[in-house]
Image: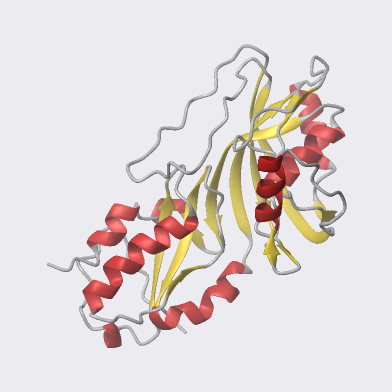
Length: 278
């Protein structure tokens, strides 16, 4: 299959879906505090009106966390049959990590729940620790994730327990085999440096909680190239533990999924403009 992949310079698409026999793939730059479902819902509504098809299939090829931004592949029509194949491709991320604390979700969806000594964490120490994460390894996904546990999403179990003030059961997630091809330290800042705030975009979900980041903690920016199924939040947790402290994500951007890069990605507004019903 060779779906049509429009770029930023593409005009409004034909109104006949039959003109795209292999379907359409939209590479979208998912905004901050949008869920992947929010993006699909917006595009699906526009696509159904544009093509005049009530039962048009639209889906994404790999969930991206609400507090993450970057490449989200949206498949329209026959291209939805490729979603699993596309999801299996390698990914690249740029992750922001804060050291010296943890959160239950391993990112800023939840508030800091524990603090650890961090004075010993140095730029060279982080560089050395990253070398130990290269290659194949076992990784336990975050409980606040889309992993399936007996027919339920792990995050549903975690959020229910969190709201009720109950202990989250240990050991209910099994380790998965993942691969990290490269992890490059882009920057490191000591205590006291400020972290740039990510601005909400129009349409950001009010349902998504964002906890306050502690800018007093040391933090790093890391570029990570990895296999499907790799959870960068779990990588942050494991890197913190390897350094004898805690760590969580303060930012995450998916810069590549397979051959699709963020440089070619469209904003949700640009994607919808290709599907004008006027």
